[in-house]
Image (cartoon, rainbow, N blue to C red; front, side, top):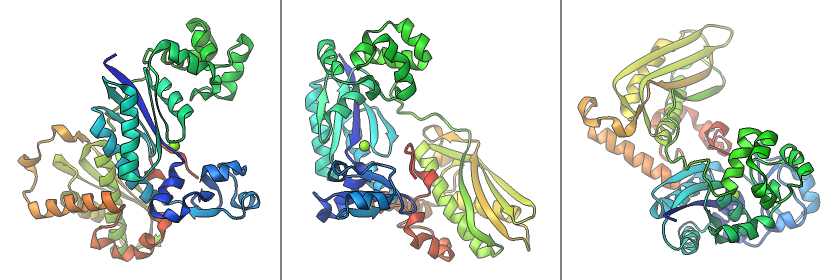
Length: 403
Ligand SMILES: [Mg+2]
């Protein structure tokens, strides 16, 4: 077969990401705690063995594992490593889907799939010091199942139908992501308990019991891809960033600082979705008062910091209500254009120094972490940046539920 589907999943990602920078955590029971430091959001195998579960409050976990090391999560750092994994994958594959912060699907070019899976796993280990497991199969669902079965630090490629059947016979049907409690309970009366039972069931029965969603999973288990690798993300109508100002303020310098912070976050998002803004809106809500809205349009859609910053200044001026205290601010980019189709040189200002500084800022932040380099206009928000829990707003973490 010319192509197979690969699935890469980091093993105990948050824990091992901490071990990359704190080597003395190796071999110790480690838990990573959520936003408020109260719940376990990830745990090492050592801690799992002592019965600690994801979602458990720290006070219960400490009873089971008093000698454990409990670390607060740092998504800024995890995203740096996530990009490292993505870089390795793009060297091996022409099509990579960023499924979540620690999971990727990708096309595996023709060749010895097992060797490729091992090479990817080893390269991620060499370059990022992260243990990952790679599964290769004829479809996404099969690849994910095989990766799950090969954890930790595994590399498994199964593409022959007989070998697949032997693997699937050993896995309960609930291992298929998308088939949990209720769906599994509907299958049980028909004797469908393993993944192989599910694969051998009739498509019509599966559709009756689990609708089209279930039928797609059934097709995938039978080796017919029903879910493509989405290397191109769905184009968005708008992209926005913003939120609470952490208290009411009417101070123009503080409002400007928030505006610039939100712009830097917005640009990350534009870059991630590979789009540019044709229009920028600043939206301000005031305590017990009016909502201020301002917007600017660009002749040519842009993701440049200097151009958007000028736009922000105009839009914020329009949105600002003198004498009123603002509580929330949102920046909304609309009339989006795909980056690759935009002609950069025609309408945009030829201020190359500003553009070069912007590119450098993005490169440094990509390597070191978010906001490592940021605009001086954000100085009034020093306290916001100093608090590591603001390093990653929950809405900025893509594709993972966190608490
Ligand atoms: Mg994982």
